[in-house]
Length: 317
Image (cartoon, rainbow, N blue to C red; front, side, top):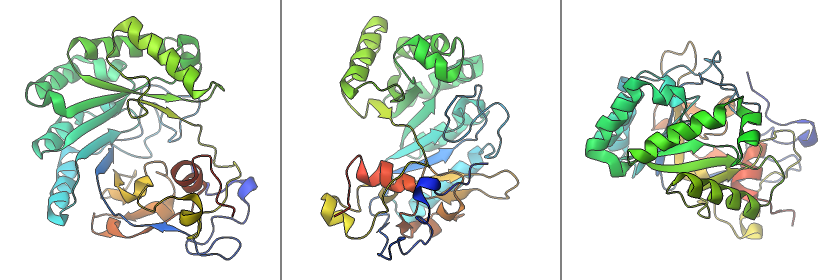
């Protein structure tokens, strides 16, 4: 289980939710404009990647399968609370491992939301029942469904280095099926290999052209390139003064616009988390309901600084 809050490089930091190690007031973020509610469908996955932030694998069921009825309950809470949610996201693990994936997506679409499914597009998605389910959803909601494909690198060798032999080939086969059936796709890649952003995007551009994938390599929302998530890397804590120093707003981090629902193994009910990147950090669990999840989030983790606020900048004065 992954429960590290701060590695050795950050010794003494990220301990108090209200105060930084040097005694300054820690920054927090309000849920100012809820746009996306994420559902983690379970941590089970058909493969085990070399550097999976959520430790998904064929044996990790730390987060168990969510059910259609549980998703529908939260969709009803969205309406009751008046959250202006436009998008429901499904992540894992591999969402298509969950036998109720199609039913959960249908529930979100029937409620009027757009649906984003994060998938490796491999054998779980390509099972006959899942393909039939996707095609059935597409009859009424094709323009409301997007699948974000995990394609770590534009080259087969480097993708398979992370995900195992023949993973690239099987993902491309899944993407070809989605292409041929008119589904909207985006890609999630990684910046593990020291390429520049321009080099990575050029590689993806060539790949998309080769296979006729209608994906924009230059649009950071269509080809998302994620850095490695190293909790031991030295990062500064974010104080209330940082917003003005950096010229940023507390409405920008993703905890200002999203929450994630998970169900822990052995739990009676799902829980709502402040952040999709911190599924195992207990201090970011907000309660079982959306009402409880409306409170402010203290930026009390290295990821809050590195990924959500700094983006390579520094607020050290």
